Image (cartoon, rainbow, N blue to C red; front, top):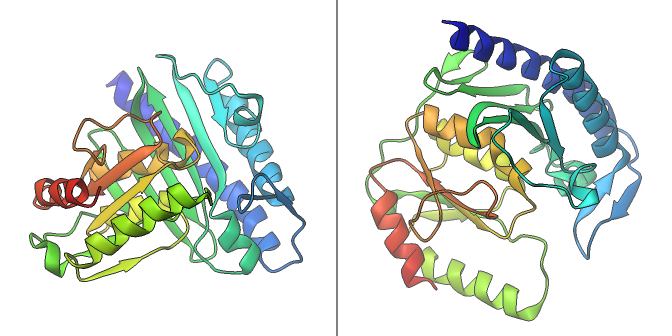
Length: 270
């Protein structure tokens, strides 16, 4: 009972933090952005940094002994080691490029791992006002309503989502486009939406049947969505079919009916 109570408290505080950051994103979305480059195409704005400060302060105020891994602060210092301690893993603004361009597919992603296991997940898109939540063994929800993955069992009728990533060297781009070319022969259609966290939530609520991404930024991209997918009845795994590793920068997700076929299609696309 105590564990359930603590998980409920973790979720409530994480939702509060996401809403606070969401207000900052919503205001900044319609204003002129001040953009910096982290890489050739990887962007960061003052909104990313402000949101992370708000989230970090809110979580540390309530859970001062918990660890914290954030994309814009902890990661910038090169410290992303995940321990068994309760750890908040935060992407304050997933979909920064979308944010800069005024494309409304942006979100706050907050995940809590306990014993390295994703346990609480909150993903909030303040522009579309969609709040995805999940707690280990408690189900997944969109704006308070239960969600579940699709029941699609045929690849050829499936909607696939992936992301191009931020690497622009020829070797990586060739591998990426060759893989997509192979998969396009086997699915209904493909989308690139620009937010790993929201892509995972799309699988969780049945909008998307298949998702994979290789070489994304770090655990903050998947920590929140991983809980939401599994609690919605989905499966999250390494694109090779092996067990999902939150630190590996490799992720795939689908409903259970499609997993084996999807893994085989990914294998053939290599």
